[in-house]
Amino acid sequence: MRRPKKPGTRLSRLLLLAIHGSLFTLLSCSFEITATRYALVYGAQNYDHPGINDLTYTGSDAVDMAASLEITGWMLAMQAPYSAGTVAKQEVFDDIDALVDSVDPDSSVVIYFSGHGVQFSDGSIYIIPTDAYYTSGTLDTNSLISPADLLQRMDALPCRNRILILDTCYSGGFVTDTGTLDTAPQNYGVYDDGTGGSALLAALGSYSELLSSAFQSYNPRTPIVVTAAGSEELSYESETYGNGVFTYFFLEAATMGDLDGNGFVTIQEAYRYARERIEKYWNFSNFVYYEASSGTYADYLPRISGNARDVVIF
Amino acid sequence: MYRRLLTAALLAILLVAPPYVGAQAGLHFDVSAAPLVVLSGDGLAPVLAHGGFSLAGGTELRSGGWIPARVQLEYYHVFPSAISPAGDLYRSWAGWDLALAAGAVLLSREDGAPFGLDLLGGVSFGAARYPGTTVAFATFSGDLSLRADFSIPGSGGWRAVLPLSYILRPGARSFSAGLGIGWLHPPRRGAAAAERGGGG
Image (tube, rainbow over all chains, first blue to last red; front, side, top):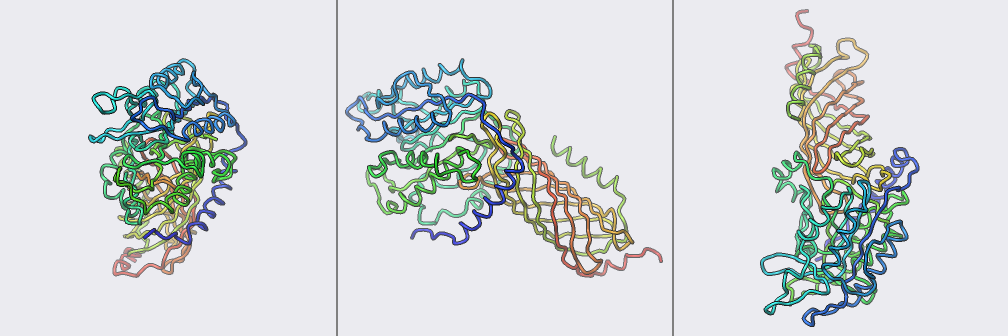
């Protein structure tokens, strides 16, 4: 059975927004974003190796994401054309390295990747660039991009806001540790019937560990990571939307996701908008479909890391 | 470091504030609501202000001029902060706090003061999450609160509350100040009421 909606949710949210709207007006006078913001946008669609199936809409994902970011003041910093549907591993790394000398401490850098992701039997997770290759019949991990590869590269960027957005299968494996707990299971589809329980109750189960995290100091430059799916879930693209499902709704948030009405859409707002739309429009129709090949249900839940800070994205 | 500061603050309260012996003894119950102003910082981005609110219910033991124990359960919601010129901000968070406190009665209406005045210090253990996500975390805070009590002795009534908290949470530190209103339930009269008057 699907979990029923709580009737008071909408009213309480409106009340919270009204209170917040007034407080926000009091606390923040007019302002504009003056820092330079760079975007690296990739859509891996046409894979070189015949063992990896091509995707249909990841090229559109990149084009649409780049357009939305550019129109809201982000500077596209890829050195190769992003509409070609090909993304080489070294190309991604070279683009990040090239930004090291360009960014200043107040800058923001967002990296977006749409394409395939893979989870190996040992649980390790990678995103797959289009030049990935096989060795001895299996995907060679040297040709893939691991969370450590990408996050360490981003760590070299001397700016305080680094954002990673992934629309790939298993992308939840890239979510960074920030001393918080994702209380939704990584194979959300199994629990989508409402048996998952409350987030706060789940947190209480690991309370002593979480409490010690509250006392620790974390690198405030730790990237904010938003992913389409959990580390044990698939992510989907759809002919209906002409994009990856997550990317479609994340981009829709640029015009409809300003939850507090302040004229800016933050990563948290876009995530929240996309997550709620996926629940409402995709998962509602697909939660009963079990994919025997992957051992998962065809519904999934976008994830976000637990950084204390947020960044305006649109 | 934080624990030492907290202990010093509590000792200072108890030493600087001579308690009035006339306050009524027994268990008291109260509820309160307060709008909050919260300042957050992470040592890298600028310190930015949030708005928020809290709703709390508590019970405390009063003995003479002391409040030796108070337990409070509080729900709070902190909205996203203002946005910095670099385009970053601190996220909204909301959750529950269990607060343990102790303090002293500085002024008491039972002794002819125009209003009662209590000062309490303590700590809170919280479980919170970022609204709209499944991301949860724990918080710890050192609390100080000043209360002006306008209740009629023995029959409950209104009080003003000024709660201050220094909050430890993953990735950031926050300072919260509120100015709220509370309702004190009429206290149950106990045997300890005989302590009043002192030798008259």
